[in-house]
Structures are given as C-alpha cells and as structure tokens.
Image (cartoon, rainbow, N blue to C red; front, side, top):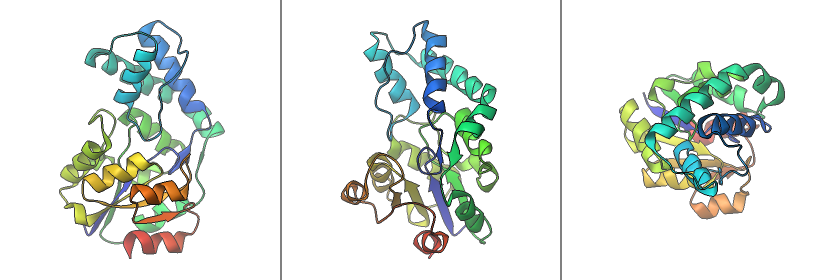
Length: 223
C-alpha cells in the first residue's frame, strides 16, 4: 500500500437530507423512552459524544450500556429504512467517480474515519453504491473513539501504515484537527456547513469547494 485515503462520510461523500436525524431521534426515543426534543451539535462529532451531550440536554445520565443499546437501535433503524435513505439522500457530486478512479489505481486503499457507528456507516455507503470502493475492515467508527484524533490513529493502526502514507478528506474543522493531530495530511471539502476560509484556518493542506473536479482531486490526493 502506497497511500491510504481516509474518508469522512456525512457531508463529505453523502447527504442524507434529514433522514439521518430522523433515524437518530427514533433510536434515542427507543432507548430512553423519551422523544428527542433537541439534539447536540453534530458537525465533526462522534456518536458517543453526540449521545452524551444530547442526554444532558434532556437531563438523562449517560453510560456505556446505554450507548451500546443506542448503537444497536440506530444501526437497526438504518437497515430498516435503507430504501428511504437511498430515495431521499444522495451521494455528493463527484464522489462516486473519484472513489472509482482511486480504487482503480495500484497501491491506493480507501477506508473511512467517521463518527458514525459502523452499521450506520455501512448502510449510508451501500445506499449510494460507495461501499465496494472501501476496505471497511481498516476504518474507524464511532464505537472506536470519542474524538477524531483517536479515530484517525485507529485507522492507521488497522492499516499498519505511517501517518505520512495517509491523507484524510473531511468537511469540518474537527476532521482537519483530527487528521493533523495524528500527523496526517488533510484535504478539506467545503460541502458541509463550514466555508473554505474556516477550513483553511483549521489547517487543511488544501481546500476544495466540492469533489466534482475528479482530475484535480486525483492530483491533490494521489499526486
């Protein structure tokens, strides 16, 4: 392996167009017995942190057992409503063609570094035909760490590659900081709620407006 490409998922590769929040609220009510009145900030965060902070907003106690129950409920909800996710959401412009081009190059392996639990990540990628470009056994998911740097280090460890042989693509300052903290070069894409200037300020090596220019992205990622 000459290059490991680490992909964030939400707002980097896919947009669930509100379905993700609905599934989250469904799982939250299932495990707590309370409707979700509000949700903690999600941009760049991980499921354990979002759940903990959302529980606090509702005056509820967090525990590992509760998170595990929530993760199971959330994964099941994604599987149950995968067709709806596919119908209402979409892959972001350029994502399928870029992943396909990278997958065709020798020595390049792609996986994910995401705050999503693994079951949700798998459904989201499969819904838009992106899963077969990824080696998810090397990825890092919400179950693996609370913070982004820990996720990046987990993926590097699973792939057994040094940070210098990896590049991370994400849409939030948290993605950028997580990659940099682990010594990984970061290419940021301004397809989420963070603009290009903020992503540059966070330290991204390069910032693009979207993934639509396949040739440019191939040069930025693979040289």
